[in-house]
Image (cartoon, rainbow, N blue to C red):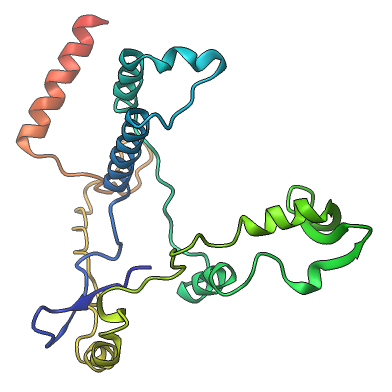
Length: 231
C-alpha cells in the first residue's frame, strides 16, 4: 500500500502527488511485462523451467529466445481500478489475509475416524456454503500451504512507517497534513470548446478528446498514405 504523498526531504512539509493516480496503467503494464520476461529468462538459464508435451521444443535455447521476443510484440494488460468502497474496505480485505489463519474454528464441523469436515463457500454456484471432508493428512497439507516460510515477514514497513522512524515521523506527518491541504483540482480542466463547435450530423456539442502536435499530424498523414498505397 502506497501513501498518496510524502514528506519533503527536509521534513518541513507534506508533498501531495501532482496526479490523482499512482501510476499510468500502460506504463505499469510495460514494466510488468519486462519484469515477468526477465524472470522467465533467469529461470530458463538456471534450469528451473520444465517443458512437456507440445511445449518440449521450447527446451531449445533458440526457440525459447524466439518465444521471448514474441512476448514483447504484444501489449500486456494490467488490471488496475479504484477500490469499490474506499480505502477502508481495502484495509478490511487485506486484514483477512494478514491477521487471520487459513481457516477459522467456526468452519470446522467435525473430526472423526481420521477425517476432517469443514465448511467452504462455493462462489461458482450462488455463494452457497458446502461441506468438504478430507483426510487429516490432506487437511494439514493444505493448511500448511498458508504457513509462511522461515524468515519471511508477512508485513514490511518502509519510509515514515519504518519501525525505527515511525515514532518520530508519523506524528510529524499528521501535523503537516492539515497545514498542506491537497490542491482542489490536481489536473487542469480541459478548455471548453466554442459554442459553434457542433456536430454536423446530430447538432450536439463536440468535445476535445486529444490535441495533436504538428509532428504527430505529420506521422499520421504518412501512416495514412502508406495504408492507401498498400490496400
